[in-house]
Length: 182
Image (cartoon, rainbow, N blue to C red; front, side, top):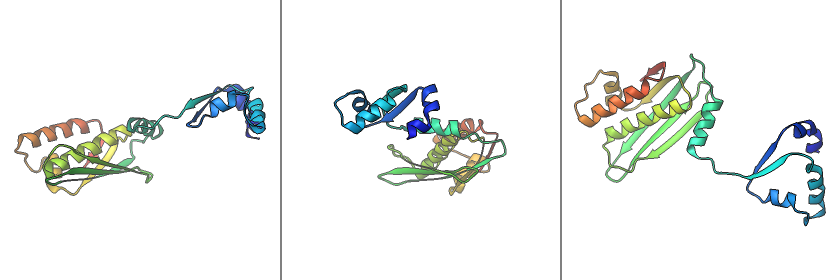
């Protein structure tokens, strides 16, 4: 019934069916059940190609989001970040809320040993990079670390080499945005 209703579309376009089942092999061999033979005859006139489905990787998902979401200049994306470190582990979390309310959540584990402040810097970088990947032009970044946000704004002075490197990296990454608030 679907093939009959979509006949003009099927005849004028090349169709690719992504599937993990052996559908392509079944549809191209004659030693199948009577119902499958009917389907094979019915669909045989169309240009249908069967391909195996591949796994969606993080970059493919990011590419998809950047293609599908085209924010306007006035749209503000909210980026919430938090990082934590202890003697055994370090992890960071990012939640991005689009102007229309959709949420994108990201959790990362850092394998190297870092201080709690360094974990906060890492999560700010992860939030900025993710916002760039999805095409946000204006963001407001929310962090519970007053030290980090005030150092980024220039209110507090950064004294350590690693802190200065993080600040320089954050400043260079955030230049792409037409608006960035902390």
